[in-house]
Each structure stands twice: as structure tokens, then as C-alpha cells.
Length: 476
Figure (cartoon, rainbow, N blue to C red):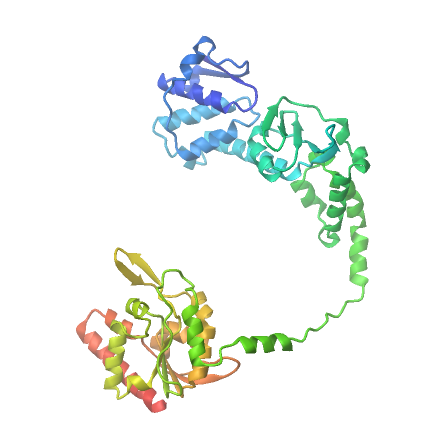
């Protein structure tokens, strides 16, 4: 049998050194007796342990060890070494087996330590005490269940870096002087931190008044409060002196609130805000396009915004989804492969592209980088909604007689609802801004035709697309 004695408290370094030696000699857990007390390790063998080779463990195992060594269970080191032994002997994914008795017990120890750390973060209260040097000094008393004092030290140093403070516990103590952290031995609760000294502490008195002012009598729940804030912590928390009286008075305060006459909210007239917004809105299509071009893309990556193109007063406005790779580079709509197919279809349908207003529901190119290629990604409904004000304002300046939606994204932007293009293809009323609206027409996007695999299918779909454009021209 190997007897290993570690120091009191959470001896993480000592446990690591012991594991290195035991792993190097392939010593099974059954042959190790762990104890806590004297600072020596393996007696005369201690210097040799410093040279043990590091033991490579999964990150989750290392994190579990760091937490559980803080537990007060005297068997914690034996349990942890049994875990290490099994992991080193082929069970690398042991922690995923939550039904394993060893894993289940270690998870309970881990949860207990983490809960203890959370309670110390939440329920430790400093009290101001006279400082012989004339400055401000703060002292706190806390009674943790486990050896977590050194573990929580960084939290309090970061939170109260500008204060001089001392934390006293039965497990150990901490002192911070604004520059250096000093760990000390266990302590006893000083009489100066008792509740009957509260009147002499303006710091604690101020905290008590703040706590009382935030109390909501309509939401009082003593059972839930005791579950979250157990009574064992109350003796060290100044605000708990006020809890019994606040709980007793809660029903009467709630009844008084119910009986009080309801106050009618003062109506605020938004004329000034509406007038200010109207003054800030663009006054022309050119001004709107300059605003669009200066805007940052909602999804990073686009080279530039791509505004609409065409004459104001055009009989037909065509709305696509978003710019593609080539449109993003040139800053003009419908100049890529889908745009070239649209131009040919317009010509076949007898529509002059120069007399049509062309734009997109989304003004920036959204893509994913694949090597040197930028692969188009469809915008989300939220992104379409983000750009909708621009589109509606743009169409308000153009004043078309008919708006043609190319694809589901454009139809979503113009109707505010999902549209099935193949089922609802054809004439449709589009919602405008401020109650206005347009006669509309829904058809496929030219990029849909480019994606069709069969030549015959593509020719048939293109003929149907041209027919849709002819119908739209007739309606316009």
C-alpha cells in the first residue's frame, strides 16, 4: 500500500504531484491510501515526485479535479484518482457516462462546490470598521461548506479592487490591500460583525435602506426565498434584519395598492416627434439612394450597397431578392447572370429595360466565402424586414403602376408575409407604407431558371417567365 498525505484544505498541487508518481509506477487505486493532515508527501520520497512526467487528461477531467479538490469529503482524492486511473486505461469518455456510479458521485460533489461558490459570491457582505490608519477598511465573515476560499479570491479582488478588505472564514482568510492578496489561517467570527452593531455602520445601514426600497410586496414568496437564500447565511447579511417585518407587512401593502385609485396615464402627444422624423426623411429618390449607399451592411462582407436603377414614374418596378456577386462589385442591380437572363426575357416580352425601375428587397450582398468564390446566401426574414422601410420609401418616390416581385423574398418584403411563388404566382395586391399600396404581380426569380438541371425544363420555365412579364406589362 502507498500512503499519501496531503495538506488540509484544497491541495491541488499535492494531488497533481501524487498522480504523476502513481501513474508513472502504474499504481492501481486499490493500492493507495489517501489522508489529509501533515504537509509531507510520501515521506522521504517527496523530492522525487517533483520530477514526475505530466499526465495528459481530457480538459473536462482537469476542470472537474480543480473543483472537487475543494470539497470537504475526505474521500475526494481517492475518488478522483479512481477517475484518473480509468481515463488513463482506455475510458477517455468516462465523464459522458452519467449513469456510472463514480461519475454520478463526482458530479454531485462538483455541484455542491459550485453551489457553495455561488452562495459566497451572492451572500458575503462587507461591513465598514474603523481603521487605525484613518482610512476605510471593510471586513466580512462567511461560513462556506467547502474549501473554496482561495478559489473565490480572484472574484473579490476584481470586484473590490479599490477597497482594503478582509474576508474571514472557518476554512481560511483573505486580505487585500489594493496591491497584494494575502491568504491566512482559519478565523472566528468577530463580535464587531454582529447585528447589534449595525447602528454604528453607515455602510451597512445604507445597504439596508436600499434593500427595503427594492422590496416588492406583491411578489413576496417566503418559501422560494428560503430555498434560494438559506437561513444559515442570514446572520451575516444586514438586510435580513428587515425581512420579517417586510414579510408581515406585505399583505397590507398589497391591499392598499389594490384599493388606491388608479392613476390615469398622461397622454403624450407625438406631433413634435412625428414632425422631426418627417424633416429627417429623404426628400427625393436621389437623396434616399445616397442614404442607402452610406449605410453599413446588416451582415458584414458586402463591398457596397446597391440602390435601385431606372426612371421615376416608370410604369413597372421590378423587385428582386438582393444583389449578387457581380452587382456588389459594380454597384448596379441585375448585371450578373440572372440580370442578363432578365434582360433577354424583358426584350422577348416587348418591355424596354430602360423604361423599367429595377431594385432589390435587400440592398447588400450576403454570402459565404468558399476559397476565392463568394457563394450567395438568402437573407433571413429579419434582414428583409430591416431593409423594408428603404424599399417602401423607394417605391413611393417611383410611383409605379405595377410592382413585379421576383421570387419569395421580394414577395415577403412587399406583402409582409411568406408567399409560395409557385402556388400564388400571378396578380397580387402589395401593401405600401402608411396604408398605401400597389397593384402587383408575383413570378419566379431568374436565378431559379439558371438552377434548373434539364435543358427542356429550363426552356419551358423560361417561356412561362416571359409570359408572366407580358401579363404584367398588360396590367401596367
